[in-house]
Each structure stands twice: as C-alpha cells, then as structure tokens.
Length: 399
Ligand code: IPM
Ligand code: MG
Image 1 (cartoon, helix red, strand yellow):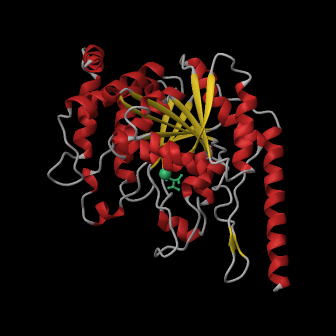
Image 2: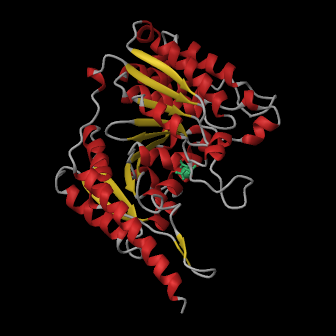
Image 3: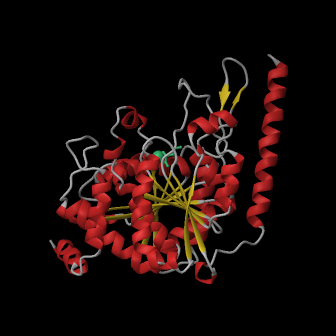
C-alpha cells in the first residue's frame, strides 16, 4: 500500500474537518436577520454574470426602476450595477469570485444575479469553483427557496433547499488519493440542518399550510441524511399544528410527475444536491427552468437569481436580445418581497402570471421569430400599469 498517499489523504481530511468545525462555531454564535424596515437606504446590487446574464439583468433592472422609481428618487433604494463577475475575470484571477467583486457585493444588502458559467472537467476553462456555490458560501445564504406553481393543475410547491452544506460545500475539495481512488465529501451540521428546516416550518405556519415534506436518502446515506432527518423530527416538535412526512429522493422524483399525488405536496425541505435536482424537475413541470426564480437567503445577505444557465451560444450566435428575462424578473419579485416591498412584489408576480401563463401576447423563442427581452419587459410594465390587473389575474385563477 502507498502509505504516503494514505497520509496525504488523512492530512487533507484533517484540514477539511477543522474548517468545518470553525464554520459550526460561527453558526453557533448569535446572528440576527437584517431588518430592512430600519435601513435608511437599501442597496440592491445587480450582477450581470456571463453570457445572456447582462442582457436579462438589464431588463430586470428596468422593471425594478419602474416599480421603485419613487424610493430611488428619495434615496431610499439604490440600484447598483456590479461589473466583473465574468468567467474571463474569474479565470484571470483564478477565483470563483474575484476579491474586488466580492467586496462590492458585500457592500450591498441584496443582490440580483444573472447566470454564471460553471466550468466542469473538459471545458476550455480551468476547473474553478462555481461562482454560485462560492457566493452562497461566502454570504452564508443557507436557504435556497424556489417556488413552482401550475394553478390549473393545483400545483403550488415551495422548495426549501439547503444551500451551504451537503455534497456541495466541499465539492471542490475532494481528494484523489491516487490514480485509482477518489473521494468527495458530504457534510451536514446540526445547525445547518436546523436553520433550513425551521425556515420551511415557519413558512408553512405563516401561510396556513399544515404539512412539511422532508426529502432525503437517509436509508442509504445514513450519517448526513440521517442527521437531516433526525433534526427534522426535533424541529417539528416546535410546530404541533403542522404534520410532517419523510420521503426518499428517488420516489419523490417519481411522485412529482404523478398527477394523482403531486398536488398533495406543498412545502418540501431537503439537502443541497436533492434540492438541485428536484427543483429542475419541478421547474420543468411548470414550463421549463427558464420560468423559475430562485431566492438564496441568509440572515444578513440575500441573492436572487434566474435558475437557467448563461447560454453563451445565444450570445455567440447574436441572439442574446431574444433571451427570456422572465426567470430573472421572477427573482426580482422575490427580491422585492424580501426587502419588504410586499405589495410591489405581489403586483409584479400577478403581471408575470398574466403575461407568461395566461395572455402570452409575446412569445419568447430565443430567436428572431420571437419577441425580444426588451419587448417582454415593456409588456410586463404595461401590464403593471393596467388598473384592472388584479381583477384580470383573479379571473384567470378561477378558470
Ligand atoms: C442551481 C445551479 C447551480 C447548482 C450550479 C450552476 C452550480 O444548478 O442553482 O441550481 O447546482 O446549485
Ligand atoms: Mg440546479
């Protein structure tokens, strides 16, 4: 046996364990949620990202300016474009997020982020860490909240995906012990599981939902998923009015396409990787990943993003102006809700429903036979000014 290889692996493992112990200490120290109502000025960073990102973010910015015009004029909200989170810059600095960009982001309270290219083995880029994953970790955005709704099928799902642990947190810190043996790590902490599960139960409680479904693979991944599940059992004791059930990820992916069962699910909470997979499946049921928005919430910061990729091919082929900005605009609605602009968020959500699900006056095809992102944003703003919006939206809900 190559003892030197074993020793190197042990050393590596000791290092990651120490790192994670420090993270647990940080989580244990008291933190409080940002109270947006007490801030003199809320700074919203807009980070374009790669490929079509800057294009769709510009449209989301126009919509936000339209809705927040008064607050911006009064200096209560600032919309601040942050440049530089591009794959070229990240490769140049060999950092998932270049330091100056991260510093800029940390000067904001919340961020709206376009898609960023995630290099994988075999790509022309060096295999650096995903900017998404790094941002979630650096800003401690532990909750990935992803709603999926298909009203005509009675689907109203809210996914609470753990966002800072699981298979992701050491995704770039696996170890090749030798040419034949590779390890990755999966991490769960009591604090990390508890905070996401509690958020899911709180959401259920606030919205009068009487059940939370916990998704793991605790029959096989016994230690970390086992901790997730036993933490759920503990947390549930604080919510006597809410039932909970547990599902394994494999059967859950099947149940989401079971027309007889799927509308029974309302609030679902799960470790990172299962949430990644399940929310793409769910978004596809809603109409495609391009139709979903995603909130990454931490106690101090929050980041809102489109869940589709950066589509570099659209830019290369000169089609970026036809990219569909609905996912990032949906994320902008979640951002508005998070910073306390609840009514504006509701208006924007209604306008998105009317424009994307019901009227569909503009078809987005991603090509010149469809509408441009600018036309779509214009359509959203026109719909927002419609004094009849609420009545119209309600009439669609009824049918
Ligand atoms: C998502 C994405 C990311 C993830 C990628 C881009 C790293 O798929 O936000 O779901 O896996 O979390
Ligand atoms: Mg994903």
